[in-house]
Every structure is written in structure tokens, then in C-alpha cells.
Image 1 (cartoon, helix red, strand yellow):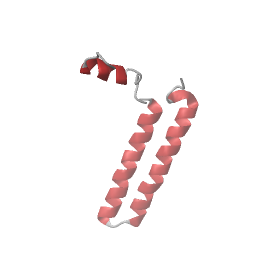
Image 2 (cartoon, rainbow, N blue to C red):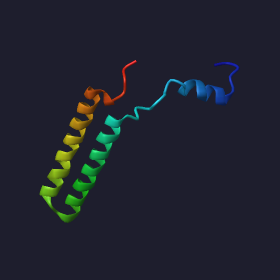
Image 3 (tube, rainbow, N blue to C red):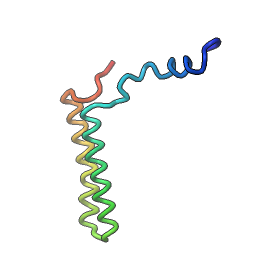
Image 4 (spheres, one colour):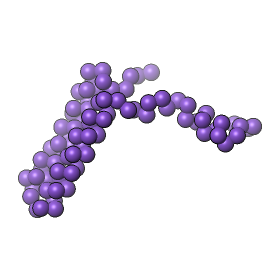
Length: 79
């Protein structure tokens, strides 16, 4: 990259990242998992293992939902 300015170097290094994986499948999975961590945290704070277990189960549900949505074509397209 001799002769390139720093700005050109940065642009050249990031040009291949068009969407950064921002898809409905990814956003849905992340949202469900964030809610799961909130539920789990509340469960720990109030001392309820049932609530914590629900939060842990929601993490698994979020991952499954994201994968199913990806397989339905709502995920990142392969190059």
C-alpha cells in the first residue's frame, strides 16, 4: 500500500464489508438473546433459579430462531 494516504488505506481495507451481517435473522436472534440475558440477570438478582433458567432457555431459543430464519433466506447471502 505504498503511496496511499491513510484515508485511502482505511477505505481499501473496509471496502469488502457491505452489510456487516445486518440481517433480519441476526437482529432477531440478538434481540431474543439480549432479552434472555436480562431475564437471567433479574433471576439472579431476585434469587429465583426458575427465572434464571427461563433466561438460559431463551438463549437457546434465540440461537435456534436465528438459524431457522437464516435457513428461510432471511440471513446473509453466501458470496
